[in-house]
Image 1 (spheres, rainbow over the protein chains, first blue to last red):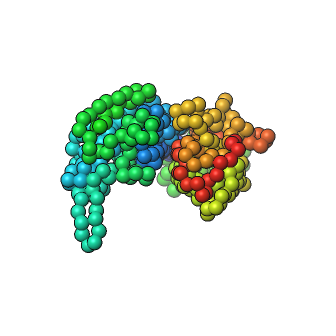
Image 2 (image 1 turned 45 degrees about the vertical axis):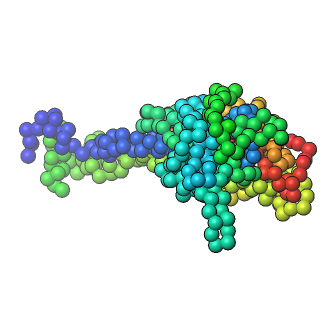
Length: 231
Length: 230
């Protein structure tokens, strides 16, 4: 009955401590789940906030009929405010006004880029939205008459805001590298067919309509953003 | 059973002797300091030892999930209310409804609406732990609204509840101090230990959730009127 047992064999046969050993085996899995939930949730919240900031930028930009440089700076600030309490310093924001010229095509009316997102070239043709959809799905591109109605595709526009945000969960238990999240949002001007930019603030000097522009210019805002515009 | 019991003492040279003694003499067995009672109950005791750790982990997971669902609910609720305020559907105190259809909304009404949107907290504690700051600013890039939390204290005494007139830029922030229920691990995440509101301070272990909205009141003269400020 007495077996020639070595200490190792005895240890292997012993059932004492099985619960502790089992817990030790599953502990890394459980712990990484808890800490992983924390990291993933923080990142999800960051994504939620960056989408919200994008929508806020579009909402603020489309509310005006004409924008001065200071207004544009403030729109960027309003969008970045939404990121609180997360840091907004490294966020890239691009606000672009796309206008139909009436002949079936659309151009970049003006475009402002902050941080890592560069502004688009003014007066350049614009065919695809940030989500890959054709611009013709979002904007009435041509002038035509039919069924007793006249449709005007001249100088109507939409404003597209794109953001890119790089976020590293502060705890960094499981997600250790920066997660880059992008968002895009389109909105339509509510006060006029298009939002004029840049405006000198004088009521009798509104910026020219997109279809009448021939030249391009560029300006830098006080927050460091660069704007390209057609005039 | 007999076989396993026989094996159990193999590693202990004295054990079989004790066992033999126990079998031959019942009296000796009774007063033996070391009794062959078996392994039964051992794993239960072991589980009792590891259970606190295990349950902390499980409840920690559940609570973390709840916290972040609340965080997103808070963001959604503030976004919905911010929209109603800026289009004039809701009018905050300090403003009067001129001729439109806007409804007055008090601070407690606002909190109730947000708490209802969250749905995961007891309403009574939600009303204490939720603090709201709505203020008109000269510009978004101007002086920022007060941070809700300083030195781990969420203090509502400097907060406003005023949405201004058409065209004003408004920053709306909602702060929710989530009371951490799972001890241990989650306490590490706590960043707030008291909430001060209306002269009363509630202490606890809280995780501060913040939601922020920026908007400009729509030019709707019928429903939002100029008020006196914060």
